[in-house]
Image 1 (cartoon, rainbow, N blue to C red):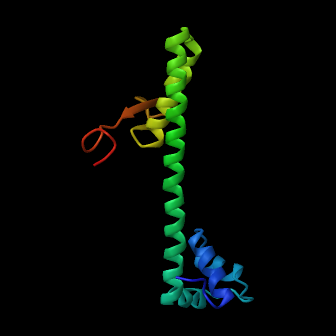
Image 2 (spheres, one colour; image 1 turned 60 degrees about the vertical axis):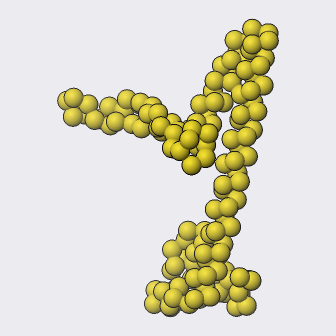
Image 3 (cartoon, rainbow, N blue to C red; image 1 turned 90 degrees about the vertical axis):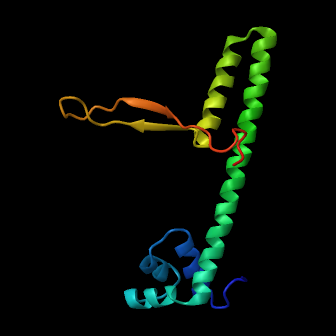
Length: 143
């Protein structure tokens, strides 16, 4: 869908797509008197709803590419450091490789950090535990 012809509609759609509330988006779009009903009415406009969905879809695609790119870069770092550690006996390189692999696992949802804020006496105690999540599918990252 192309940019909306009405500049205020376009700005409203962009702000809603960014996560702003409809009243704030209405104000940021340049409408002088904030009005909840008018903001709501704009959100019922099919063109505006489609534009918001399109903008959010593009942002989601960029986020996926970013996660993929970061994962690939971290794996490159891990493999290079792992090789340095093996070839030269460099303990620090092993540590970097290990941390890069852990970062890849966290980034891709294989490790989830969780905190338990309760203790036996009911007070707030934040012990951290790491939970491994089993792979879905055939284990090679594809389902």
